[in-house]
Length: 84
Image (cartoon, rainbow, N blue to C red; front, side):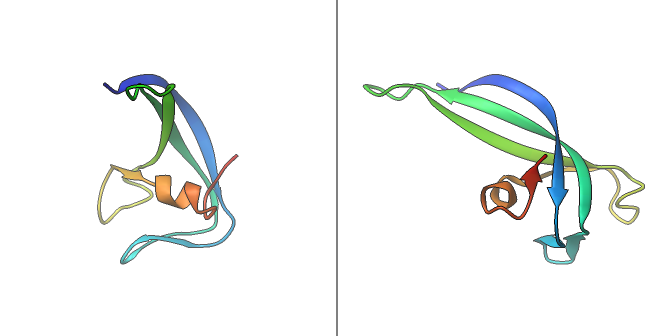
């Protein structure tokens, strides 16, 4: 059964523009976000920890969409966003 182990505030660095989804491009710069670690305990195996990353955008950053959280885990894992 998964258990949220830790949650902490992190800073992401985008060295170049990152297209988060069609029409939503994150310009180069620094962004506040969150890292959440979840612990899984598979049967017969040691514990596994999975990290998930999100960026929270403010209304000022995304005036046309409004405040939202966006899962950027795949961009961190691919190296497009760096946890600074």
